[in-house]
Image (cartoon, rainbow, N blue to C red):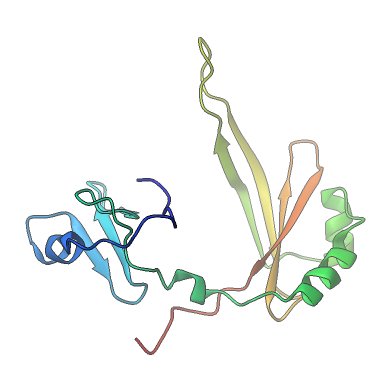
Length: 162
């Protein structure tokens, strides 16, 4: 499953629709998000970005509409609020208790290098919803307490009106 390529046309062969209506096929359609997914044996699913027959793109997803837009002004304000925060202690002192805390929160795995195994890293994650109407402040805490801070649009719910 590759990421969508905007330079390719949308699927014209209608395979997605046929597959989703075939009870023997592991493709399902999520009408709320306008997405096609491949059901996996463990009950999960993987999003499909391209048709396996014509290589055309899947329909445009509505997933982006699930999150608030963070204006450039709000991004600047949040940057000013967090720019001097270097450690988890700094973050907790300045921002207070997080809305959510996950241990581990972020897990990443590097691709294996020749003759070496992949390297897996895990970090604590803190998220703060109380400092902005439109953005969540996401904090990744490294093994030695140093932090990386990002902002993302708050979840506002699945799109309606389709």
